[in-house]
Length: 288
Image 1 (spheres, rainbow, N blue to C red):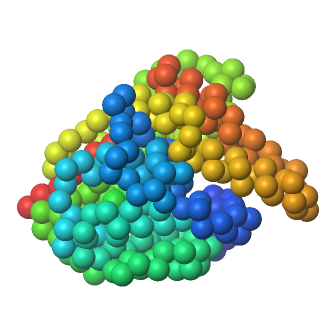
Image 2 (tube, rainbow, N blue to C red):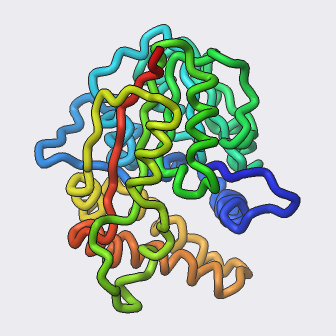
C-alpha cells in the first residue's frame, strides 16, 4: 500500500500502521484478495504458504509463465511483504525490492522477511526514490486505487523500468453496474471510486504496450468463497485471539474489522457478481 507524502499522515496509512502494530504475527504477510481458478491445484506450493494459498496464487496468476530469473524486480505497495517474499523464493529473481509508504510495514518486513536479495524501503508511489531505467520488472497489486493521480504513478513506473521492462498491474475498480446499492450491500464497495477509464488512460499516457488484459473477478469470488487459505480466515483467527486477550482497543477498531469481514463474506462477493466491482489485471511492457 502506498499513498502520497503529505504534511499529515493519511487515514489509509494510519489504518495500516494500526493494523500492523496490532497484528505483528509473521504468519500474516499477504494482504491481497486472492485468486482461485476452477481447476486450481497447489502441488507447486510450499507447505508454509498453504495458510495463505489464495493470495500466493494471485501473484502467481498475475505473472503467468513470465521468466523472472536473474531479473531486478520492484513491487510498489509491498504491504506486509508476502508478494515480495514469494518473488524472492519462487521466481529466481536476482533481487527484489519492496516499496511502501507505511513505516510499520517496512519495520515488519525487515524483521520477518530475511531473505537473500530481498530488501524493503519506505517511499511514495508518486515519486519513486530510484534511478531511471533501474528495474527489469515492476509489480503493483491492489494499491493504485489509493493514489491521487494515476498518470503520475504510471509515468514513475515507466521512468524506473529498463527498456522493454515489464509491468504487472492488478486492482479492483468500479464496474459497469451503476445502480443504487442498499446500505448493507454498499459496505466496503463504496470505498472504490476508481474506474476502468482511469487505468486505461494511465497505460496510454505512459505509453505501455498491452500484452494482456483480463478480468479475473470470477477467480476472486472463488477465493472469497473458499473454505480455507484466504486472507479472511487467517485474519479472523488473529482478531478472535486479540478479543479473547481482552485488548483495550476502541470499539471503532473492532467495527473496522467487522466491516472488512462483511465485505469478504457478503457485499464484496455480491458486488463482483453483479458488476458493481471488477477485478482486472494487465501485463504491460515499456515501449520504445
